[in-house]
Length: 367
Image 1: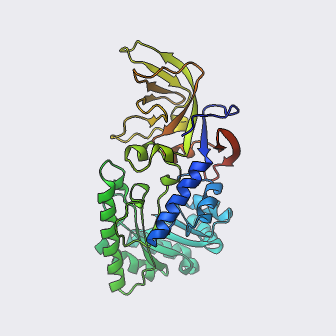
Image 2 (image 1 turned 180 degrees about the vertical axis):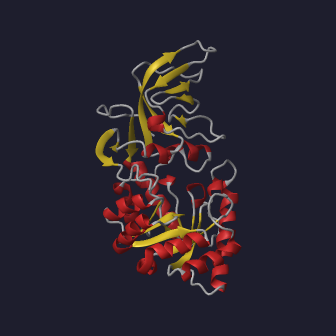
Image 3 (image 1 turned 60 degrees about the vertical axis):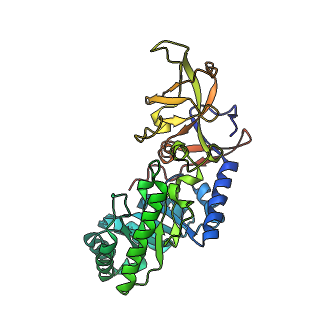
């Protein structure tokens, strides 16, 4: 990974290496094509129309979003197949927006309760049949979703409410822990298979079986899924590095930062620097298993031990030269989805030169 930061970049700033980005996009697209599985990337990771266009051009069957607001941005940007992968509770103000979306694109929504399905159908009224719904299954993450044996009850309520029951989906979020991706992929396959079979026995035509996360997407186990929804793979982050689900060369997004303070000793004789990129650009997510608040390409033993809003404290290894004041470094955020939602624009770079500026079009679209 190149360490060159273009001279015109004012730190802190998010940079995306377009060559690495495109390589990530095409590798995942090829892997899904080889397995005969549709790729529906989760665009909450990047929130940009330019990256979504690259993913669709490479063969993605559509996109996944987290909110109605995100769906509106991408539909306005020309995306024609969108899944809101979350069990929505639909009020009338949501229904008006969903009706407009259903008129602009192929739209699917998540549901995981009889009450949620009934409310959705009632509020959508005559437009209910224009919206596909997927019943969310809990495959081990224990967030939202029902057990496979409970899927039929929710599907029947959705059908009774006039909704088009398209199938089932899950998110194997428990894959985001060391040693867990393979087991989570197996859990996902079993839960989706059981739920889809139950719906089929109940008389439903299951058109879509949707799963996937970045940690599990490239695990080549057999799967019941007809499509997968990884998101982070497109940019990479420090979590994926430490889960060993990507390499250093797969990191497309880094934050350019400047050394503003350095200490050869003191404070317990710890060699450390401070850079001008804190939680307001890196995000503050740190799983209990992570080694710090981010990583530095080229300095693999350095650790970000503390974040304030505008600064990061980095403990520097004893066997490496301490960066000088004013030196510019790249930082890999722990969770790239948070970093992207913290800025209005990102800088696209290639071979150390700026090639474009992209708007984070769906930033802040949280409802």
